[in-house]
Image 1 (cartoon, rainbow, N blue to C red):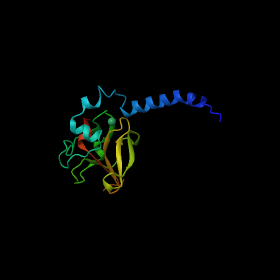
Image 2: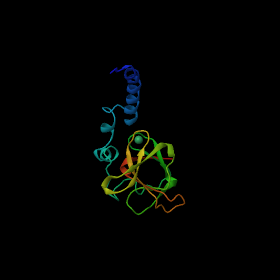
Image 3: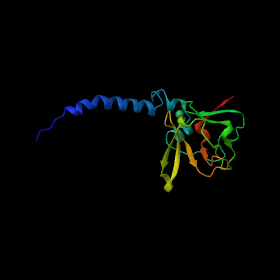
Image 4: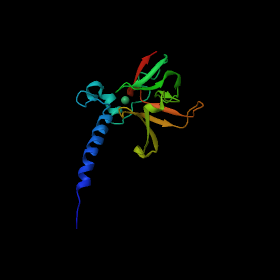
Length: 155
Ligand SMILES: [Zn+2]
């Protein structure tokens, strides 16, 4: 048999570049050592990086009613505007639309024996919460987001 390994060597540099860029994206462009763990509280780390869920009615931003923007607690990306926030009664901050669809990522989530749509920060990959189709406004959407995964910037 005649094996030709040349293509593999040609692909290698391209693969390395891809892996490098994926790693960079996964960490929000921040080197892990100086990044997440240092800047996030243990609870924020549990939610954003380990896909945890905060206890309902415990989040600092649950009753935030000022005008402004809700950002990713890990990387500061703008996620939701105060105009999209509503009281869902669930105990988690709820929004009927993202500030910019390009800033979030939706993924199918089959954990806990449920089929749900996971909401992630597109820039750093942080877990934010879940999206449901039972919203009370015209969009019909309910972005159920952990308060802990968010920061707030007053307008
Ligand atoms: Zn982020």
